[in-house]
Image (cartoon, rainbow, N blue to C red; front, side):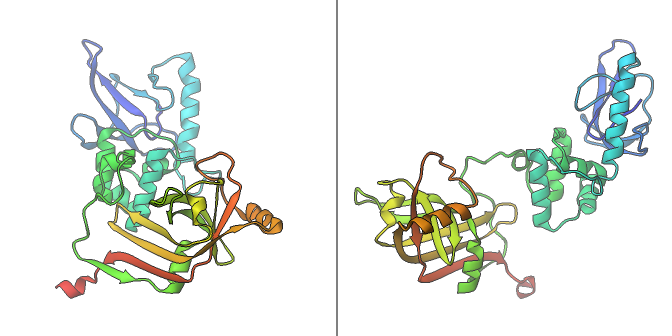
Length: 315
């Protein structure tokens, strides 16, 4: 019998052939994928060291096929063994990680929490190798493992699955002792970085106020974005406008906001337009032809950041 991390160990009833118990293999003790295994049982959420008996078999993650003796299983076990060897030292394995959505979220929340893989794995009662596998490869952990990881990371299983992406940010709990700090001019410029998504506040062509998200670039201290003639963002040209960028860290209940104010103009000089196109990092998310460049030259910055207050002041 051979297995790799994430496979499912199935124990059948010796009399009926029905599944008596199953669990996710979250730890290996041999690089060739042979028993014993650390298994998180789906019915109890307990993790135990298992030496599978004759009534047990492995369902491989990539095939969902049983590990029962046959000619084809020899080939499948060879594949599982090679994958297990590669995953036994994931941080040193050459090649590019190809994480799934859950793995990306787990890794991001873990980094925000300042937790190592080893500490996170200890809290979730899984092996560090399995956590590395989850973060670096497309995977589908069991509900029990997802709940254990969310508890270890101080978030929810729904968040790790991507739930709430259609809700506005900031619906999490506020910090127990938040601190609101003013940001200086240089810090505001730094947070704007080189490109991203921001919001421009303008008076629309129909005379109503509007706030519109746009993909922007920062080029030579100017905030520039592409749009279409006659669009709402194009109405910024010839006026003093406000441009806002922010970041909300849901997992940590922290964030920052930067507001830049200044005159906006349309970039019409051909060489300047070509340079902006050359230096653009991404296409506009909205797609379509957007060949009108608007430049905002900020004359004033303001910014705020929410962070935890120093605990010593609350003792």
